[in-house]
Amino acid sequence: MVAGPALFRLAFAARCPSLPRMAKDRTLATIAVYSLKGGVGKTTFAINLAWASASISKRRTLLWDLDPQAASSWLISTDQTSRDAAQAIFSKDVEVRKLIQPSTVPGLDLIAADTSLRGLDHLFREMDKKKRLARLIDSLGKDYDRIILDCPPGLTETSEQVLRAADLIVIPVIPSPLSQRAMGEVARYLVQRGGSPAPILPVYSMVDRRRSLHRKALDDQPGWPAIPMASAIEQMTVRRKPLGAFASTSPPAREFAALWTRIERQLGDR
Ligand SMILES: Nc1ncnc2c1ncn2[C@@H]1O[C@H](COP(=O)(O)OP(=O)(O)OP(=O)(O)O)[C@@H](O)[C@H]1O
Ligand SMILES: [Mg+2]
Image (cartoon, rainbow, N blue to C red):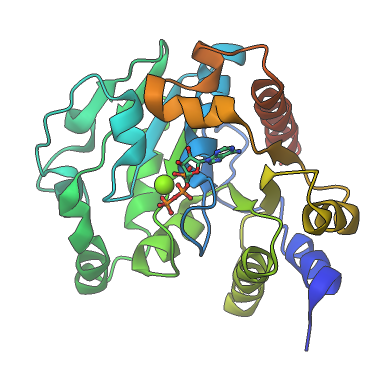
């Protein structure tokens, strides 16, 4: 059985930088923030990485909220009226551009989630179009440089679509055995599934260096970026803003900026 650090090396071995979908003339890159587990920091990552893309890199950026909980949408939407239309994009009942709205962050657009997405797994199964999300993303290639996907947890039809559409899969990992196991499961799944999986970038989330378990996890994977547990991050939900918009010089904001730089570098190596 493959386990522990060996499995993580396996995950990195899943990198395949010369995929056909990464044509030379294409500047668009899709970054999925994904995890099997809930509550690990996906939405927090998605919002702050999207902010960094739009504000630091000045990229034309779209945040696509695929989670029916609609947390990203609640945090940065300029229009809080739910239209129950988010799922209709996928059945082509609504043109994807019609649901793009500006967010509260300059330079960052949003496709908001709503509760209609609860039926998305069922819809994808019924449609039997394995690359529907990837094709919709491709259709936006002229309009955006970076598309960030805030994903629901789980290994579902929706995550299948996400894993196929992404150029890079960022996985927040709380330094705990369960969260690390979930990360290993995703890596194992991608390898077993075959094809040309996108590279995965595990990132420690909610790190508290006072805890010995966290310090040990960091020692085990010194190459993984780490986002600290921070009250400024909790404040995001009170202020409904990305960190950069109200605490841009705080340590966690700097860690997110560094993470974004690393992501850009990795995308540049494609
Ligand atoms: N580094 C951090 N420091 C402090 N609080 C954090 C940090 N990261 C996330 N949180 C808080 O933890 C909670 C869960 O984070 P978040 O919503 O980003 O997780 P998620 O993986 O998107 O959850 P879900 O699976 O429900 O979509 C939120 O209240 C968020 O503000
Ligand atoms: Mg979330």
